[in-house]
Image (tube, rainbow, N blue to C red; front, side, top):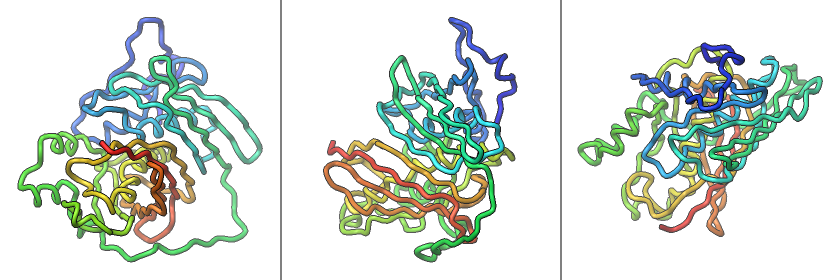
Length: 311
């Protein structure tokens, strides 16, 4: 994933305005452009931050952009196999984010990068990513998916479920639906009342795929899936307490995020995101996710902790 300008020609002179996201009808194209960072110096990149009607920048955007910055400083021959990140401060929508990359290690088999995301002079996010030179393993195994689920094409989209329940899509959701880069389909029908949610198991599963083609660069697909991994994971924490759609009872913020990438994949093809919350206590909830392809092969493992405070 590279911008049309070369890295050296994208350097930022004092006072120069950062590039802006062009208006695109396809949200998938918009996502690719969002992940295409501008290099402003050696090991320093700048990412766009769209002006949204949100309190804070979406965490998946920051994680995806930080991983792009890390990948841009490697030889391109080693795919990422794991990342560990902390969300330190809320990012401000509409303000560019600068990503500073530290080249921690370049070994024979592994490459390590540390990325610091800075906005308006303050660190908002840290990420450490490890890249592994492909090699043949001496053995292989995986646990099968925990349950059988319906085919994604047989399930309604989130937008269709909301329209079916409410009769029309509220303006806020209508705007979100137009910008949404992923088609999301919940395996279990959405609950709409606290009574329906009460005592439900802290589990959720969704089918996802980008709403349009993402090209053939594996880095784009990895970073796009990193973006998507933060979209629904904390649902598993909320499910026993409140409906997923409608007014919230809690202010929710991602605290940290870890991912392990096991196999190659395409984020514009269907993948199953199976999520569960083993515990919620002390104002924090832990969620674990497993991402499978349509053949049941485990692609990615995810763990995240979130902060939950009553409004």
